[in-house]
Length: 463
Ligand code: LLP
Image (cartoon, rainbow, N blue to C red; front, side, top):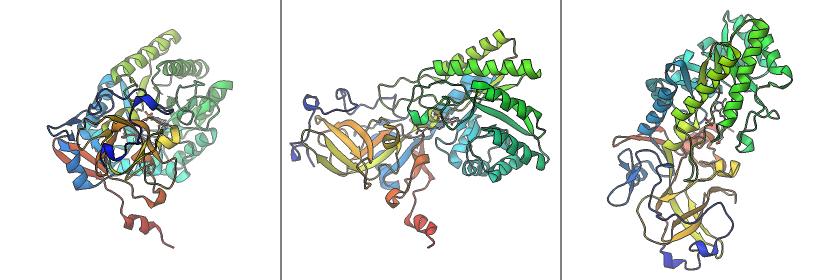
């Protein structure tokens, strides 16, 4: 459909309805390196390439929608975190952001550890050969079976989340004749500046044991008494998609305060602290994330300073970035199916995926950008809403975005920064088939998670 085929459509900034957008970008064909994976570029025909592969080639070979992951970028980001923290600290990639066996192998090769939070993630990690002692096992309600499996496998740490779990893990470990290394997850009472659903250090939510009222101290007291446990440290995760370092600083301050209290009461200096993940990434050009080396410097300095003040040996620090490693490395490639201008409002662009491959917009009001990637265009910017094909009006992928006014069915568009919490939170709503993850590197593409098929769906339907 050409631009002139829908002249009633909203064109640009003079009549803009309410929304998140600012003005249309100066150049709609430009790809801001802040939000696109490192090797993304356009070739001489204007087609976007990544890892040396063009999106048209990828769409032809693997279909759409598809998550396209830049392996070199993933490895570079993993390495940047590893290098920034050096040998006195551990980086645990948070598998919940996106986990597959290929990712587990890349992590091993780049020297990272892995945080898992379910039996399924643990199984994936072990099946791809991650040494168990480099795995941290999380979760606020691990089942006895999951705990037993983790203890038997010999995971490096289990992060305890409740009083019941302290006893449960101790009991299981003891019955297996083992002493399990554990950390105790506390809530430090920080209000992280992020969406309510992904903030985790305030007290009125399900994770961790509150520092307030001496509960965390009591948890440590109980854990230290149990033979099945070796308490190696304290864990704090304040939330996700956070840009402001002050929340981490307050958390570090309070965690070290607890270490001091533990030393004073028990004569024990716990050797480790984990400050969790949660560092924000750029979803749009307005976001300004911190670099791993800045984060490492800030966290290390504050912990060292606080420990000096408390006359404690500086504990070994660990962190658990998920989004900050995988988020920027992938984009979702869609084909445009329909273009529907609504006079005085905006143009609805329907793609062949939707809330089943990216629930974040509907769930957190997340912001994304989008670009036409199968060609360039000099057409005027058109205010659009990119929507999926599900039977639900909240099925929105990108709430407000400018795309070229000549956008037409068959064009390929891509939404960047979808590496984290998109495939891992994908659903089969409306019996959608979850898209593949295609890893590209140096001119080669490899499916690391294949597209679901109708047989996959029907295999579960045994009625
Ligand atoms: N460590 C712990 C204990 C966590 O709970 C999480 C995330 C992380 C590390 C990794 O956080 P990251 O660095 O990826 O922000 N589904 C939401 C995010 C939920 C995060 C849950 N926990 C989203 O799509 O934004």
